[in-house]
Image (cartoon, rainbow, N blue to C red; front, side, top):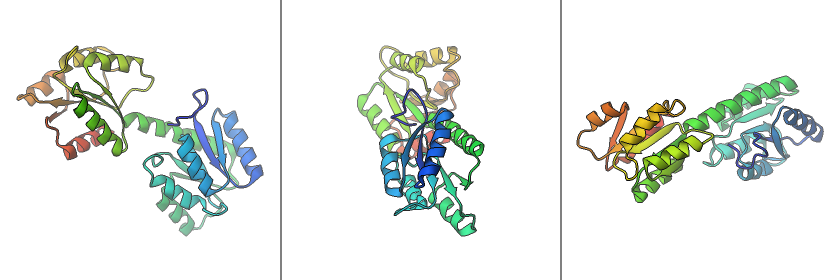
Length: 254
């Protein structure tokens, strides 16, 4: 999701080297409620994407210097921008051009000249899908051991997740109840000060807004099956946590 959105608007990066076309599409997108930033070549498109982290990129196929396909390929190979949807605007309908753009990672295609209502519909649907995916990739790590907590957060972020932490159940509940976007998964330690994992899970299940968030237990208990049953969770990871298994379990809950 865009870090630099203005007034909560979704940010669309519009990459188009024809001034008249850019003006038309930017006005239409702005009238639909999007905040538009622009670029007129592939190199600038990559720079703008890294700076603004837009919710979506509308990319022209033919650009001066680096073309839209090459720019898309760079964006899709960078962890900071790979999850941003790219809509390719192209007058090319030959199979080889479409295959090249698809291989670069384009998420959708629109033919030029593009009907304006179709542009808005495609942008709106892809932004909504991307936001849902972003929510699913958010993970809250509730763990009182700072070293373990920070290590898990760093590991998840290296693999494309958006991770945050809380040192105890009470802090986690406060963060969740104040959050505008809930995580798609909670990794929950059981033995913690202030409020342990058992008490946290009880309060979570009693809160209609939070109850549906899946929980994976991080446990040093000798009775993992009983803990999983009593806490109504499907997954439990024994400490010390096996990294490949942790990543596999988290990935299943995307």
